[in-house]
Length: 104
Image 1 (cartoon, rainbow, N blue to C red):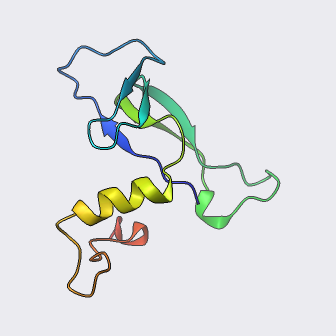
Image 2: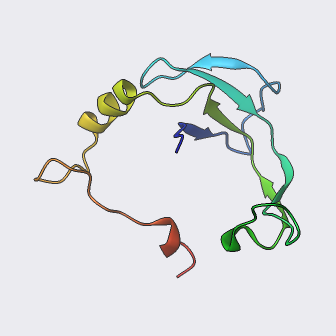
């Protein structure tokens, strides 16, 4: 699984040019801007290796956002994790929500 840091750009803000780079304020990682727009999410039933949770394909609109150019390293994850106020007393991360809970 690859994790990437994401930062959304509000609609009121003037959008940067697609592909513009910047450094993240929290860890200095290089980020790239992805412009707002529509994309196809999911898979068609006849696609090879399709999983049940990828069905059905639909058009989705996303606001523009910034995302790390590369995957988050273990070192970056630990740096942010130790500064996270949601850490539990046992030293792990507190569970806030699971992806499967989103539609409930």
